[in-house]
Amino acid sequence: MSWKIKLIGKTIVGISKWMPSVYKRFSLDHTKPKHEQVETLLTKPLKDCRVALISSAGVHLKIDKPFHVMGSGDYTYRKIPSNTKVDDLEVTHLYYDTKHAKVDKTIVFPLPQLQQLVEEKAIGSLSDVNIGLNGGTLKKEPHEKETAPLVVKELVKDNVDIALLVPG
Image 1 (cartoon, one colour):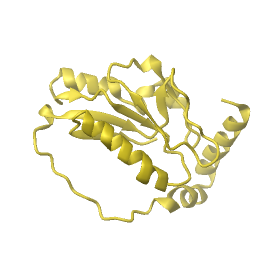
Image 2 (cartoon, helix red, strand yellow):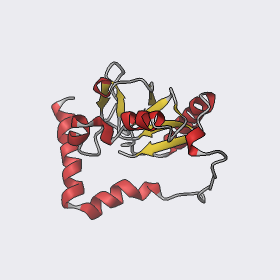
Image 3 (spheres, one colour):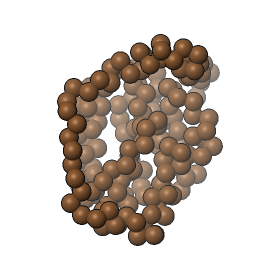
Image 4 (tube, one colour):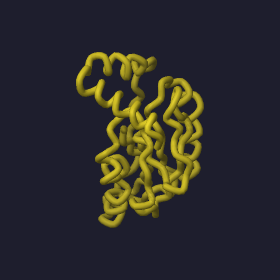
């Protein structure tokens, strides 16, 4: 990551710490829900469900192209297989301090913990389609209108019952 991107990231993190009201207005102003929340009940026990992991913390495979963090951001997603080792993951994000996430990537992408829940038979299975997104974008419409429908198609194709969203 270039020094310019690191400087911008540190500035944003500094603003969030030292001027939280300004940061809140900037970062949350565009997140007001337009629709009522839809309640969906599980139709089968959790121990029989196929679970996918979705993170907006900028997680991707090291071999994948990093998220573009400049400008309005990156509205694409990265697929992460369920057999991925934590050491094969990378975090690329500008709008939060990734220092701890880079040390322990399971903070923002708890894949081993979900694998353990499968072994303990607490959940049925783990999807082969787990998703990394960069939530640090300036517009929500591309995520809503383009990215989300594509991700939903991927999850439906893999017979996912539940998606666990881990924000970044």
